[in-house]
Length: 54
Image (cartoon, rainbow, N blue to C red; front, side):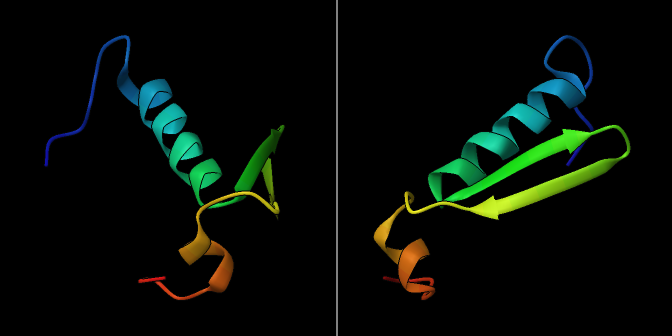
């Protein structure tokens, strides 16, 4: 798979990853050179149960 470049490049990839993580109940926050994450009560049923297939 080729690396994405242009306006949707790395920023677009990061945005897509954040959206996918939010869907399964993980929130990521950047602060300078560190990233912090936390689990939320949201997300899909399979993400909440911890089992990949629900």
